Every structure is written in C-alpha cells, then in structure tokens.
Length: 335
Image (cartoon, rainbow, N blue to C red; front, side, top):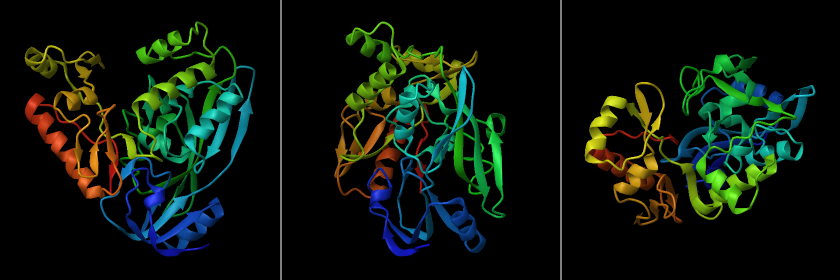
C-alpha cells in the first residue's frame, strides 16, 4: 500500500478545490481496507468527491475508496439483483444497467460521483431516488473491520438523508451496493415535466430505458455545467420543506412562488427559484459564483477557495431568509 504525503486533492473533488491531504492512499480491495483500519482510525474517507466542499486542508490520512467490480447476484424473469463495488463510477454503472436492459435508475443518469456514496445522500433526480431501487449495501465497521449488510429498512432513508449521514456517520465505510432492477415490464418515470417535453421534442411516444436516460442527459447538459470543465458539485442546496401554514403566509407576499405538496401539512419549495428571485443566478464573486443556467449550482471559475464558495453560499442563505423567511440548507458536505 502506497501512502503519499502532502497530496493535492484538486483532481479528487468535483469543485476542483486545491486542498492538500496530510497523507493519501487509494484502496483497491476489502483486504487492503481491513489491514489499513487495523492500524489507522483517524482517517477521512473519500469516494468520488462529488458531494463535498473542501474549505481547508485535511490534516489526516485521506483514504480513497477505489473498489471496482459489478456482478449479478440473483436473477429471475422479472428482476435482477446487481451489485456494484463502491469505487465504480455512478454514471458508468447506470449505463451498464441500461445496456443490459435493467430498469429503475435511468432517471439518475449523469449524476457525478461513485456508487458507494449514493446511499449516504440518498441521491435523487427527476422523480427518482436511490431508495426506490436500493436492495442492500455492504459496509465495513471502522472500529472492528467487520463487514455488515444493511437492507433498505436499516438505512432510514429520507430526503437526501440516511443512517450513514447521521447515526452511523464516520462509523462504517460502504464497500458495495446492491440494487433490485426490472428486467421486463419496466415502469418508466417520465412524469417529471422536462423529461416528457424532451421526449416530445424527439417524437418519442413509447420510450425505452435508453430514451429516458438520453432525455435526462440532454436536460442535465443544458442546465448543469460539466465538473471537468467548470468546478461544481451539482445542486448545492436542498429544496426546503416547510409547513403548509408558513407557505400560505409567505405566498400572500409572493403569489408566484411554486410549491409541491409533500404531506398534508408540508410543502416543498424549489430552492433554485428562491435563489433566482433573490438575484443571485449568474452572479460571480471573483472565481466563485452561481451558474448562469441553474441557480442551485455554485461554481468554481478556476481558482476559488472552498472558503470563498462557502461565503457565497452563506450570503445566499442569509438573503433568502431575510426575503422569504425560509431557511435553506446545504446539500453538499462542508469539510
């Protein structure tokens, strides 16, 4: 195992922040991981680096989980259980499933990051979340190196939430994730308006898994910058869920405010709309800014520090709280 010192993490986070790791190691097998954990406990776990903002150097050993491999563990006429190791690129895994006619995650195409981090955040897009197809995951306990299987009910999934983000934070390392996907009679989720619009533009009336994926990719490319070209972490903020009674008060002053019903007593308000109405869309503060096409996305135009991007995000939060009385929370992990 090769441990490197004073290692730049610029290529290991999608914001492209040039923070340094005191030490760095890439792990390629579970055996390597277990051996490392027997001797090292004060570590920082790094997956695809797609859902974090580095605001400082990491003064500890950064462990990059780079476990590879995809396998079908169970299959019948209707469904397949397919396991992907944590280091597999998420979009490439989605493409692998579509090529094999496995349905259920096509709406999650082109999301940056690796498979192992998807359950932590319960990633979601265009009407679909990880929990919808999640079957189980394997995770190694840092303290004992024992591998435990977590099923859907164990994970306590919520909106961009899971047990790994809360009660079990920094206690387990996910090494593989298994999904239950359809092999036939696929239930396609095209109810998200933009998908239907995109399919109509292409005159597609009976879409396939590939068609839905292509539509999602086209939408994402039109709205979201490629992290390889412009540093970003996708949606920076969660869409706030507020009490229906609070919404009814706010909408009196802002009747054009869109909302989505979550429950009898709560509604979800699009954070991107709030940010745009607050005047931040497309604004730039030196090398930190807000993307011109999608107000939810904060970007690094080249040499912004994590602290500069964080400062912009706090300005946005403060302004929205003052203007609308709504507190928006960061979706990305602030390090």
